[in-house]
Length: 277
Image (cartoon, rainbow, N blue to C red; front, side, top):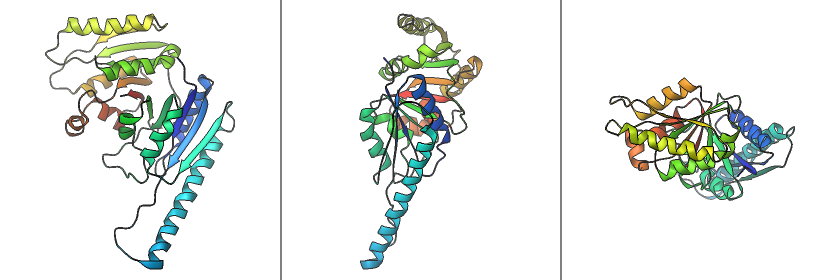
């Protein structure tokens, strides 16, 4: 398995430099094509008017969106002009999430920004929280301050769920290029530690058969500390530049209300995060 096509989702009202840098590096590492995508729609005003005045507002708004999308294309072209391989641009006046989801059919992995506000503008932003649920592809969320794709140390956040299994499989091309890989499970306070260690050891053995040497680890259970905080501590201990995790192991409603690892990873993590659902 490899990544033959890397897709990068650009946003109108967010910084795109970091995601373009990481997507370009990813395409170079795997000699992959890179496809830039962006979309936005004119948000009609909350007040009402009619006739020529209304049509004028619509025309002006759509023209502004067209200009801004052209600006994103220019940014994409500038970022990819000196990189080898195919570079392709796709954009539309459409809802961003819907457009990116449709285009993802031609990608092996989608790169997005790490900023994901609680209430995002559906007319201007394809939120990673929405993308990861429906992509059918791994999503690489890149924080704005990231300068490069650091694969010297990769942390696999394990939980024995279909989402985590899919994430590890989706991350295999990167794991093969990593210098150090650590698999960690953050157990619940009442979990059997021997059972937890047996699980992460199985994953390490599976990775070994795919040419990846990984260390297995179980975090110490802490009753008053959220799993996301414990995971961040382990990531700091191993110097992880990338975290691999399954998305929304619990219901998304529960994660939004109570918080959770996925919620943390797409809103607060300072590291690149590969998520699969």
